[in-house]
Image (cartoon, rainbow over all chains, first blue to last red; front, top):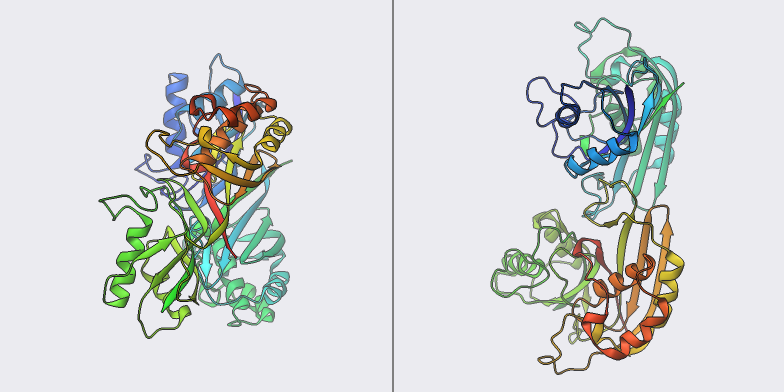
Length: 247
Length: 247
């Protein structure tokens, strides 16, 4: 049977979704070890995509094939009983035999969360990146407008253009920025994201919000394809994979 | 100069506000060590009240006397630079010479937060107590209604009545219960709270919400003064001191 599951994790103490070698400090490794014990044989877990070390997920989607005499809800409860407390399974359901969490994903939404204040926030420190200087959210929204659409996002990635031969064109459907007192949330929705793309987009918008960049320069930046022209790579703790959509 | 400050802390890794002996794992100890270094002489920190090990504060109020040639904002920034990341100073201001954070407090508000769901919540696990069985919030509200007012709350405390000679009468102004999807927040406002009182009140309301107690029995419970008749002591991680008011 093929199962689809929605999971949540706090990435703080992990090296990411998947790292070659040391699987014990990866989310995928924790899940595969547990499901292998449950099924009595090795189980391969497919995620909708990798998340970097320190990045969180509120709605990561996975699928895995296994043969067990348990209902989907029993699988969910079994997993939640034995997973470490920074990983949780929100739901498990039976999926079509050919469903694949990564290959069938059509859209993803990430949120980058900023704590914009002169004083720290002890409760949100694991999930927000603090910026002390006040951000001009209107300028950030203006810059974001230039980024939406189908573009080559090579400048906004940490890919090595000499070694990466696949297309770096992606469709960014929406960048929505919400401000609620000192919390600024930037939601990115698109058909796919390159390596480090969300964190570099967020860093570029932050630089626009600090007055270090003009919103109008986004077009030229996309055209240049030059990583050095784009903004800073924001730290991982502010980033959360929110939602993965399937057709 | 006497200073009043509002501070925030995540209590997870502390033994509480103050514990005799080992000051290194207490909030008060951390603050006194830092302020002593800043002032070049020992500084005594008075909190509005103790919080137990593992309990958080979003708006704890303190005061301390010291002589430094720094503005209140410079003191705040100095403290935030050197405090561990689970303690933060929101504001510092000059106070009247006789202002005392504990003796002058007239009202306090605590919130007890419950995650009421069959699945865990990885992001809120340090600040919420999980209860898997569905709670009937209307029943909890009904029970809370009987608790408000000026009563002897001895039954709702961990005080030893044979050794505690002071009055155990307190005025509970309001118990407000908010439900937002799986999050249930119980706000307690009153003129003062006995040892463990908020956590035992919360535990008693939870038992009413689970159908284990009738809301109507609250009156008899207050009258009995018997700890064994009241509900369970809820775990510390769900509790946060929200606000301290002064006249």
